[in-house]
Length: 214
Image 1 (cartoon, rainbow, N blue to C red):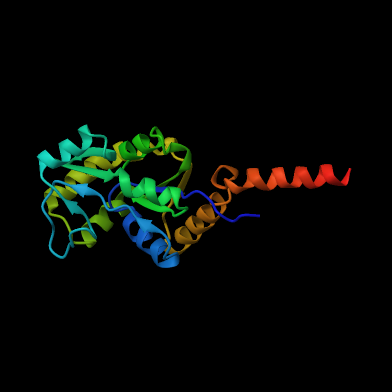
Image 2 (cartoon, helix red, strand yellow; image 1 turned 90 degrees about the horizontal axis):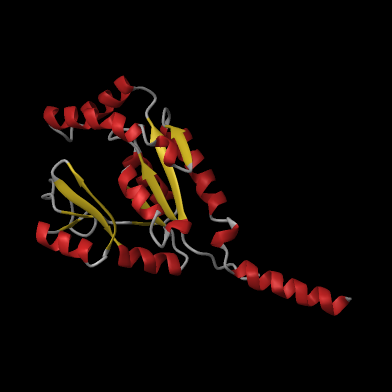
């Protein structure tokens, strides 16, 4: 039977600090065939970020043009900047049977699930074990100012309130255990009937063989 399959759009969402970026990196290390959807953004690069690897940095005008021309699979305005996922590379990967990993919020997840690639999505939401722990993680990673941390905490409940719209929801109280659960989910979803276009031909072949026998 042909082993070809359609790729998955694997969406990871969570409030900032709940671990989605760390887990995304672990999944990429687990399966090098996974490609990460590099978002376009209008915010300036942070120290150490690499163009085309961490983000594609664009102007407001170029971003708005891409949205108008349908070149963004999803987009959002967050903390004063635009973020979005270019559609072209994702469509190509899915057609070739390669999975694409997204680190996006609930708005982006909904846009992707409502797109023409929606049937290929696998959405997973990560919950923190507690709100105090969420704040602690934001403070200890030392990436943001106290003002930004406060804004992220204010936004966290809005993010969490959309947990019910996801296929799977995991409480990330232990990174290793959560990573293991994610691998199990992805492995199973790759075998979904809808992700295996070769099954139709195989069933027709079985039917032909059956008819020849009787």
